[in-house]
Image (cartoon, rainbow, N blue to C red; front, side, top):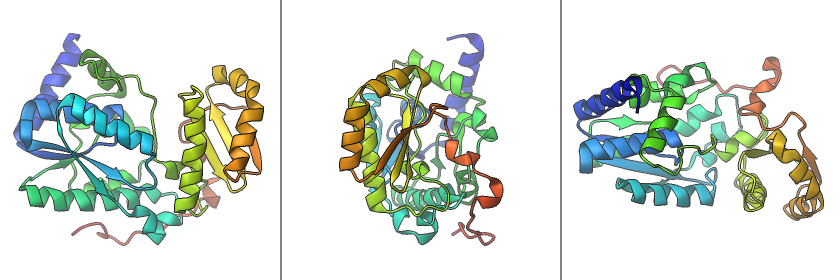
Length: 283
């Protein structure tokens, strides 16, 4: 660990020690797993990691989160969230993540109160400032801390620390909930989420790791890393057959390749938004 990274890590440890207790939203990605690991090291039983289980989280991701919590030695709780039942979330506006995070943070607030804890935290980092993140508004309304960001840790720093601590997710590709596979304004349902999950699980089992299946009603638009395109085309008959069994009529390959947040490229004037009254997320 170089001097600069050591300084940031020490700062993170001090921040967590000063907090004294924390409930952490842990999705299973490298950011939240590293935060949970360091919090457990610093705070022991005063650190609790929570994973939200809902139809927007693939079963594989839930199992991985449970195994990671066991490996890092943090107390882990799985809660059920119902964001898909919220008509504002289901309408899939551009600020969809606000409603999902509001649901999550409301549950975490309740749990923190039951535990007698003061703080809630999540895995936002220094690099997230430039991203489209409506969930940040929900975090602000619920007083949720971002210790990684407060410590000045970038995504590269977090991956380096995770590798230093031998966390198996240190090089895990970025993952977003299954709701991100739908164009804004396209209604999200439990059935559609299950369809996308099954399609992506098929590609995972085939050995692909950086990909998305974008859901356009009867069309499945597959994004994979450019280097993986030849292999996907080689197995096109199997992919098409399986996806049609899942209910898709057309199965396409996006020649632009895998792109994080590709649904954000739509014409701004065509992207719907659900208005949020001032203070709507506050209790």
